[in-house]
Length: 122
Image (cartoon, rainbow, N blue to C red; front, side, top):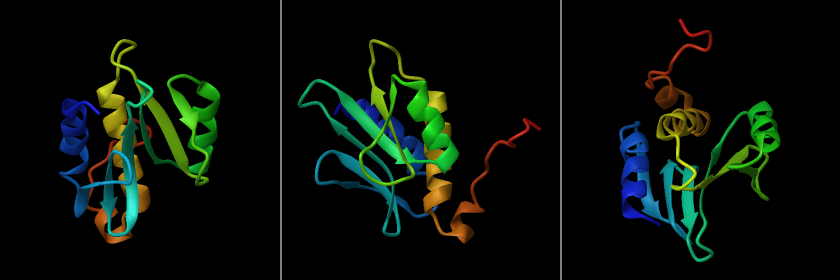
């Protein structure tokens, strides 16, 4: 995994209350308490991936969007995304998705501390 990518992801997640980076069984993951917020891994097949959490309707929507998104084989609320530098990585969108993932996984009192854009844009 390119170290620059891990640092960019950590810049988003590491600023959130009690969200910590740690080595995973493969790759790197970020957790709040015992809940995984995001997991970045891959490279052995020259493909890098990140998984994170989403609302059930978002999971279905991203799955149907196709590349670079995929549905993982585990967990009903897991969204996957292939990280492809050549195709371009929308780091701003990924930051929003990771923040949403954190808010879904964190205890309510921590999630409420996170500033998020309003759904209607106001």
